[in-house]
Length: 150
Image 1: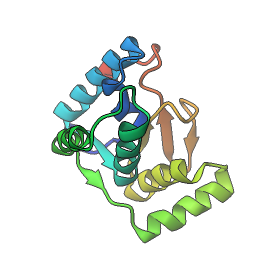
Image 2 (image 1 turned 180 degrees about the vertical axis):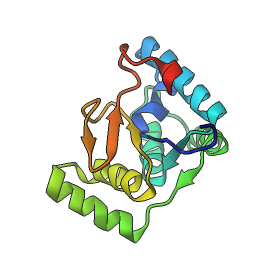
Image 3 (image 1 turned 120 degrees about the vertical axis):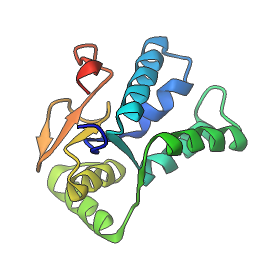
Image 4 (image 1 turned 90 degrees about the vertical axis):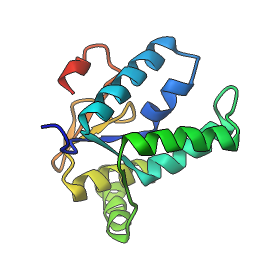
């Protein structure tokens, strides 16, 4: 199924390759991103790109410069298509907050996956294996997940 978008990537998976504090997660996230980029099977929510920039500039240790952040973002955009935040996604996210108790920004990612028909969100921020309204959550950094299956 190469070239079919099956996965939506959450921000944490974009940041781990730049964060030296957890070498295991760093290596695993790098391997995951390389594999998904080769397969053409994942996309980035614009919301995750915005959050990536904010965290890279302020919370990484050491923080990235604006120039280094832009270079990292350009690499991500060469590897993965970016899916926009649209008014229907915003409205669906609000429904997700109300119905499922998501934080608003997590709800945006879920809403985008649901409206775009993307079956899996890859993230540490949701219960791995849970399925909500047709969208499955998977933590690819969980050691029990075989990255070769993605």
